[in-house]
Amino acid sequence: MSVKAQQRLTQVASHIGSPNQKGASALTAKHPDDIVVTCALRTALTKGFKGGFKDTAPADMLAGVFKGVIERSGIDPKLVEDVAVGSVLAPGGGATEFRAAALVAGFPETTAVKSLNRQCSSGLQAIVDIANAIKSGMVDVGIGAGVESMSTQYGPGAVTEFSDLLENHPESANCKVPMGVLSENMAKDRNVTRASQDAFAASSYQKAVKAQKAGLFDEEIYPVEVKWTDPKSGEEKTITVKADDGIRDGMTPESLGKIKPAFAKDGSIHAGNASQISDGAAAVLLMKRSTAERLGQKIIGKYVTASVVGVKPLLMGIGPWAAIPTALEKAGISKDDVDIYEINEAFASQCVWCVNELGIPQEKVNPKGGAIAFGHPLGCTGARQISTLMTELQRTNKKIGVTSMCVGTGMGMAAVWVRE
Image 1 (tube, one colour):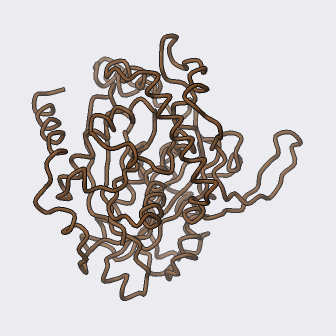
Image 2: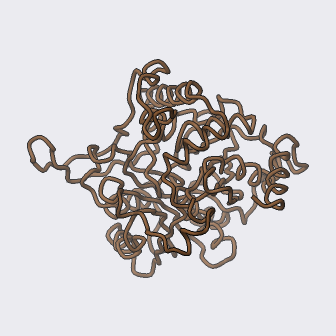
Image 3: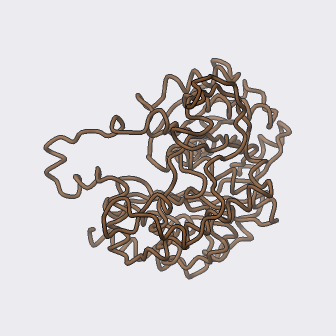
């Protein structure tokens, strides 16, 4: 890392302890040009290769959440001018089928659609792109979304071969090191113990089980009807997918401690303390406050700001540690002003380190569990987090939230949100 980059990270890290003069009260004030959220929902997240969406194309899941946004918000589809969809694995970026999905869902030909890929932050980047388009006056109403079918598109075909030019540059070559290996490197480099990882993972499962049993995910999930082939009988059935099916009850640090490491004999990363391979989609409807009030749209929250940063490729898991302070600084608040942090659990190792290093109280992090418990459909996660965050802020009568994730090749992204 260059001296300049080290200085920047030191500066943003030191900010975490000093409240900005603007403070939370300024952040929660209402203004006509606020970028607000009037609908945020997702599909259930299902287990890769065996769950409810294992036979469902990503565009079909996307069409489902698009229909959900129209239905639940009551928005006139003709008013939605642009849709951005984050996705990681789709051939061609998914541009063609995502446009088709919007048409199927009921948006007219006047609604534009684009796809984008910033790896694990793709869904959040899509939302930020729409927010910025609204802020600049390019569009008045838009949707940011994310989708991934890891069942149908995850595997060797998603990996790009590097040229000699890229292979012969040491930092460049590190960009294609597999995620599991990267996570092992980070755990060893930052001294994150297996015990701490397993304890964090067990807590994620336990929180998700409790939340699911209490119906805390029901409001954010839009049921989607799909075709599903029974792997035992081969019979094709029509099912309605309406609940996360990867959540496992009874997980403890002791039970997780018995699982063999996946990437190194002496490693600490395994299937139980890493995010699940899964399928899902999510979408967020955005517009200015003045527009929402004119249209009679119910405002559930507002987007404040976002940050995106780069870190060393081999330490990509530290991304939230660099991105969160930057987003807080932009928002003019301190870490203590935030009520809930939704930090993606790509691996327990990176999430544990980031939370501890930032000094965030554990009870503020992923109160309903995270990707270890219910999955991380790559392009979907950044959009999924908004529906999870908004419903929990509403339920607990809290105000300010942050969403964040580490990003493949060595990046981090974060965004600040306020519940209405």
